[in-house]
Image 1 (cartoon, helix red, strand yellow):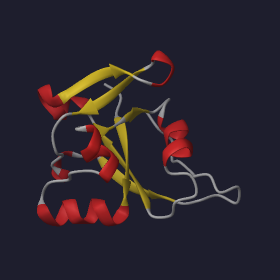
Image 2 (cartoon, rainbow, N blue to C red):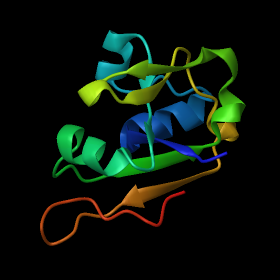
Image 3 (spheres, rainbow, N blue to C red):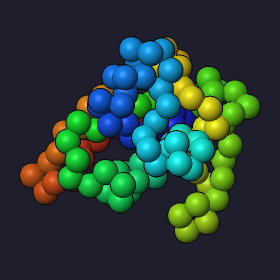
Image 4 (cartoon, helix red, strand yellow):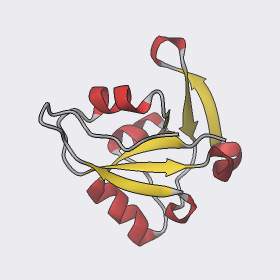
Length: 113
């Protein structure tokens, strides 16, 4: 199965790694779930919600690792987005990578599944 992706601010991610549980951003906590995107959605999500931000970490995970807390829900334009209704154990992730900013101020992504 294809991976799904979360855009974490580095300080929040490192706090979660140190604690062994990642709770997400203030927006995630307000909404009651961790926001994830598919590979086809994450570039637009970054432009919308993390534009120009440095120290954004792309977190990649196999959705099968997330169990019953993962729900696919309608969001932007009626598309289904993955939402995790629990905290995330950082040990479950497939990989993470800091996203550099390009000359245009947009995040530069690695190849995605």
